[in-house]
Length: 392
Image (cartoon, rainbow, N blue to C red; front, side):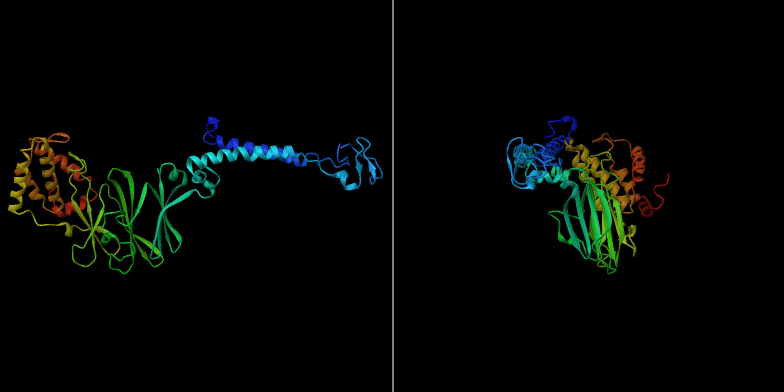
């Protein structure tokens, strides 16, 4: 319908239908009550004005001779059933034709997002789940849902059937993982993962990017309130639950994506591990659990052999740099920065080309590496692990 009057698009269809509906009803009303506003006595056949006749009973119309048997006949409304029928056709036939065409094209659901119903029920619930008195509901604008499922969605968190939190984002997922291929052991909705006796819940927002970006939130239900224990934009990383200190309650394992695409492809980027532990109030980074023993001599030898093997694959020479960069970065995140510099002297692939071009000198690499690692949200913890190794 909007194609009929493009200047009014996208409302031209409704404009035409409304105009025809009003015109049709007006025409039918006129045919039904067209001379009712004239209150004087009239001949029921020719409508001749009979005002002034004293006795209306048992008389005839002086104009057409129609007999008048009772006075009430003089005040009857003269209706035009042709006009009534024409008005009803104008008001309903054309709209019905348009509606049936749209239904045949798009189904009845078409009128749930283009008609008045849209303003009554503007949102569609994508999914909803309730656990331990907390309900997570994701909704989207009805028009967007039925015309490509694009745009912003809305998350509503309700506590005991009362709205507590509302957020908007691209897509929302309840729990750490929501989909096929994930073990149920990673799901925490309603479980106590902190050890304080209160149920915990997690949800995250996906920004819509390629393998990015995820803002994850962990909350806790305490009596009649919701407390946030963790909320952070994790970039390309998700959260893994793992009990690292054997206290029966899991820590959060998060991979830092500060080095994503830094001098290499995404697949070859370093993603060093960080660990968060519940401190009684919230989850905070815990360097003590990130600390690991340095590489043994056998491990260093095996790593050098692996780098050397890549030299025989010129078509994959950037992999040599990716392997070195990942191992070098991991040593910083495990508190072994001195060994990282030792590895730099032993194995820096200065004659290698990375995905971004020729590899820089060792000194330039260190300068760029320090500048990059300082962008990490966990930089303070990394310094705590490695002492003053970053001091110039």
